[in-house]
Length: 246
Ligand code: NAP
Image 1 (cartoon, rainbow, N blue to C red):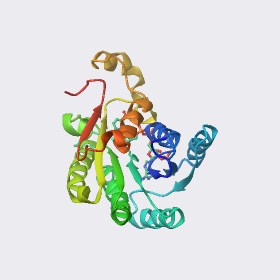
Image 2: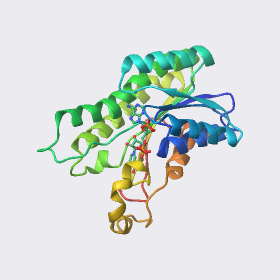
Image 3: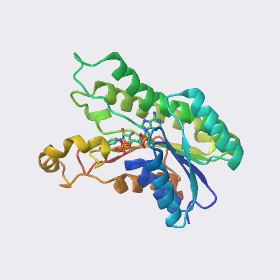
Image 4: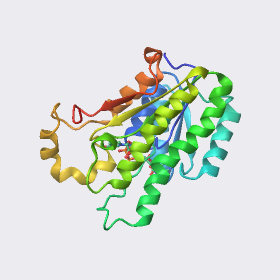
């Protein structure tokens, strides 16, 4: 198995894309830590599925937007496991609204979770990965970072920030054998997109591959980016969007 002996942390691993990523990494032998914020039962279900398939891991609750909480919990993990090899910054939220009606807290919370959350976790992980001279970081962005989307100035800005962070960090850490990349999903069927149910037909028609994505589609790209098959790839953004944005 490609990831045997590796320790992986997936933020927002309780549901949706994060759950699929957690299962994929654990399925390749990584000891997989499933982070979540509120949905304890869902995180435990991810862990149950990991174990049912012969893998192992644990759950780790913390708010990625809270730098102190992230440092404390990630510090515990590093102390107990002795290493941290893979970080997938997947935790994310959307608080949509047209700019004229958008509340300041909707801007702040989205930036704090999606962008500062990735920074908080990267900062702790980078220290350990530099010591190890080995690390793989994958940040989950979004195609709307590049395409834009009305009603999502906060979300699009946060994800564009994630792409900038990815490229800068890739340059900072490359010489230490730490690769940093991003995946940019298009429309993936999860709780986050459940409200689009009524517009599904119309959305499907706008996607060249004529279907919405599923969490496994994204997890496959993440696995590629942490596996030896991508050893010469860093600072890149792989779109997983059925051709929606090109
Ligand atoms: P989802 O089903 O709504 O799941 C969100 C996950 O993030 C949950 O595990 C949630 O934990 C966790 N989370 C949210 N805020 C958190 C915080 N402050 N600290 C720790 N965990 C937190 O979302 P999804 O669709 O799987 O999205 C996953 C990622 O893909 C996000 O970054 C999203 O922006 C991105 N993305 C999604 C799509 C799409 O079409 N679905 C498209 C492009 C990009 P709890 O379960 O505890 O709430």
